[in-house]
Amino acid sequence: MLGIGSVTLVGGGPGDPGLVTVAGREAIQQADVIVTDRLAPIAALAWARPDVELIDVAKIPGGRSTSQDDINQLLVEHAKAGRHVVRFKGGDNFVFGRGGEELLACHAAGIATRVIPGVSSAIAAPALAGVPVTHRGLTQGFTVISGHVPPDHPDSTLDYAALARSGTTIVVLMGVRTLEAICAALVTGGLAPSTPAAVVADGSLSSQHVVRATVSTIAAHAAGVRPPAVAVIGDVADIDGLVDDADGTSR
Image (cartoon, rainbow, N blue to C red; front, top):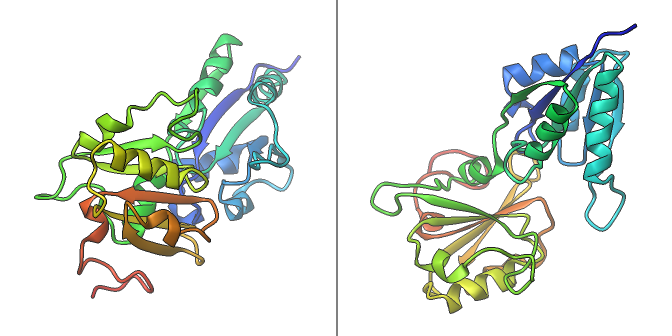
């Protein structure tokens, strides 16, 4: 009878496989089964063994997808069959990645589980565009929020007026569709309409591009941007002289 296997939750970073951690690469190389989805750096799967079983759970907004309960069950079933399973996804598993849910499901089933953090796009995408989420003299903190639902949605738990008064850089993940409503709520909450803002699309990829405007105009300027994209709202979005958006060289 096969012994119980294990599950390793691997964060794949913002998209460039070069930003996967060394530990993450080793886990991919050793995996019997890899459960992945659309935002993971697919090129990194070339590190896997030829006999690895790849399971694509998609997670396409408005398209093909696998429920979180079914993903949890896949992890548990394969580990109980004696396999070493890697759950591979983009960014960091614990930053809007449902890694906590997967960890709890594995623990409840008695499965040994390891977490390998990933480089979160919340910090990496702005950095790759030359935007630091903190900067001495401008801001002493940053707040990362999910834009999955708009401010007036019954499932929204965010206090946008408090965010507007926080004095921190505001980083919005999964907010392409809701950016206009989010910015409007921040301005209504007291954030100055002239506050700088930027949207970084396809962070770390060759298709990376940046749109800059103000909180009152960024949604219109970024109307053609498609996910994945990260929005940054705050004075840091307008820092000059750090990095040239086009080629990453100093100005």
